[in-house]
Image 1: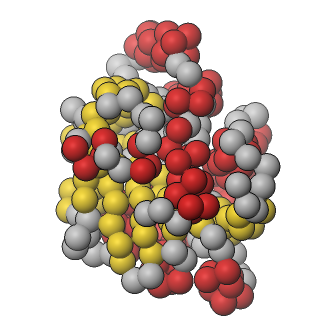
Image 2 (image 1 turned 90 degrees about the vertical axis):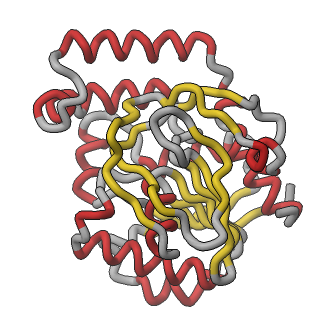
Length: 266
């Protein structure tokens, strides 16, 4: 694999990343770097945070120089329409004009869809730490993103929102009982965009740490769990998945995306 120049877009606000670090949890950018480097060291990374970085104009000028862009998760909800969210949407619009290959994960997919005219709303159910029984449809099973992937699989995930309206010409690649759009593909501007609602780049161990970190909010605010006993039971369920999960298979979409860029096969 030739050396690839990758731009990582950090979706979380600075304050949330500080909270992660203080709790001993990797930021999403750190998780992305580690997971991509698992498959190859022939990568050069730049990182940008459009919510807070003041040099976005300089970044915009260089966007066409990147082989690919990967946009990670966030604790934000896109329908809240805050200034930091608006900045991310506007930056995504610029990226869609200039970056040929974009992999948009969870929050990143929601931003990509919104910027391209689709719609995201609060889901009727949530995925906390794990997405169960994601099933590839015929379009997904034949797509290079899912080369050598099982047709049905579980994956780390953490989301309360979902895509409810696809951009023009977008194609759904996979679904499960919680989210009808677990992954998608569409072209817009000069970009070929692949979106994942789930998190192949995040370990189940980190998901458990996030559940413990957000435990009080998950019980009191989100009302996902009634009490701490339910949280413990859910963590035990995820630990069982760890015992049977294959690391390379779990992250296969990342490898395939790098191969797509390298071969320019999409």
